[in-house]
Image (cartoon, rainbow, N blue to C red; front, side, top):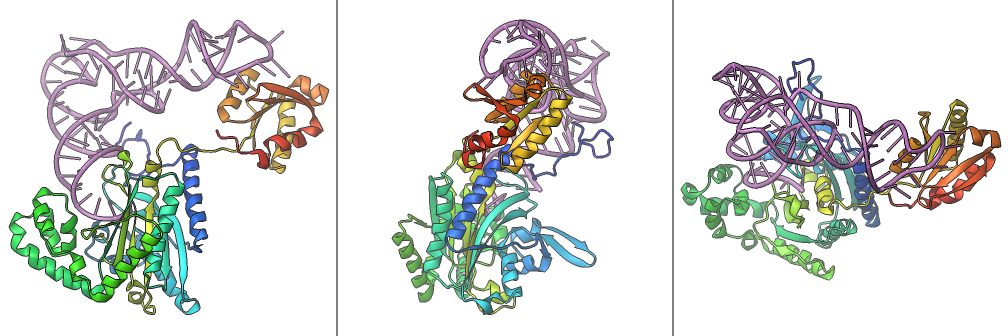
Length: 435
RNA sequence: GUGGGUAUAGCUCAGUCGGUAGAGCGCUGGAUUGUGGUUCCAGUUGUCGCGGGUUCGAUUCCCGUUACUCACCCCA
């Protein structure tokens, strides 16, 4: 494969970190998406669709200027004088829509879900791509703590509904804005004298986001991080009470959870409740976080809306697919394969296929005028339940051959009866054959 | 962005201690003039990722590069 863009023989391929999803694979995606949608609807959420492109300022201000996402991962560009960015995450755009449509004034509580591609220019790895898909929920207007726990339950229900059971829930509280500032100051006080012993990455974090030092994997940072003050000690009474109530609600929902005071997330907008769900699937490697979210009580106001508490999460669909494993049953509707031999038969096949489809029966026509043997082979490979054979004999008799591929049985069916005959067997009601 | 590994047929991969390549799957045809999933036979597919170097000769060794992949960073 020549990879020189200047070479005339250079093959065009998908952009680095962006993947094609072929139909067999897409069927698995449909399953994930439909479980997510129906679960979200079960909790009263409605779908929100926002543009994939937003003003760059939205992300810079909401996600945080010094976060890696904003600093080096965004696909930003200028067009007709506008500074635009292809969305790296979904929460900021949803909050923008919430404010823009004055939703706060129309209803006290709003539940939205979204599903779609996000873009971050990171170095690709397993479970991490430059175009990736997230499904998320956002809830506005309820300060919690009960809805915090319920949101985690929703996410867990989606994952379990997809057969992913080896999961751990990690929770933490970042406190409200004041708390976070106090904690930041405390961490600086703790780490600054130790700067010389820290890893290079962590010395950089000291300036940018000292909270991140806490979950560093570098052994050099471990000791210093372990000795650092815990955010839970810095929480004010209201934060502490809120967090305890979230945990109590999780207990009531029978959701086991691990309190992890070192859990911090890379986006600046979080306040109070923070959570991650990790899947234990071995193939996920370092990308085991399948769902992440938290409360962001200040974003709506920051966008010029009324002070409105909010909480949300996002799940990474690629990672969920990996966690589900290879044996995801991709179901295909039972269908009819129409094999026609000879031009007149092909014309008849076309007509009958059209009739089948009008009757809701999926079918495909093999109009290659190939040998029956070869067409039957294709019929098998296609996963069809029936093969409708039309040749000279059938045309002269006015009756077609209907073959049940699995049972190896076949019948002669009068031309006019073919659609009703198959409707009872391969129609929408009977289309659960796993293939 | 940093470090490691990999790159051979449509797919999965073997191989050449340097003499320009194979298997399985798939696909096509036949055994079966119109009956498939098993079997048997035959056929089909490659600029051995790309560029350069060493060499009489490089798919093989060396360097670079690109892509993929794993770890870090970061995050879903």
